Image 1 (spheres, rainbow, N blue to C red):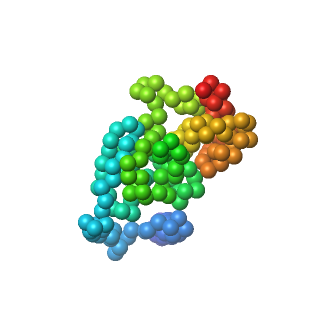
Image 2 (image 1 turned 90 degrees about the horizontal axis):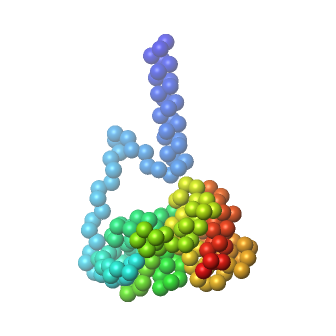
Image 3 (image 1 turned 135 degrees about the vertical axis):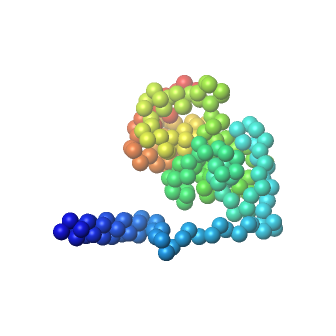
Length: 199
């Protein structure tokens, strides 16, 4: 009886895991299905050398022409602070400043920004001195899980620089491209409002 129960439990558990991964769209690795072989190297004619100023430092990387600015920053320049959220430009987690304008780094190709000046979350503070908006996020508890915070901060810095801080409603409108799944919006708006007043 115990053996039958264990077999039934295992079967149900396997069925649940298989169904869960199918719903989530994840591949289910079993003993008869091995991981795919590594991709073939990119042909030289599909590679470009990208030169940027990132956080005040000249950086160069040779990348596939299809590489997004986000992947260049995270995977080639070792700047993982900019987050990959939806990878479709819908959440704002990957917001960076390109020539002082906010950009969703997942939606733009690295090769399009040859010679650009890029600021990421790693370049916002000056050494140990936090940017005023970073301090305001702490003061107003503008973060919970923290995943969206780098994008929120970069977008908030741009929002202030653009002068879109006349009211809480205006701030909400101009920050609407940055999603916070934890729902810290009220505190984020308060942090931006405080920083704009002190600027």
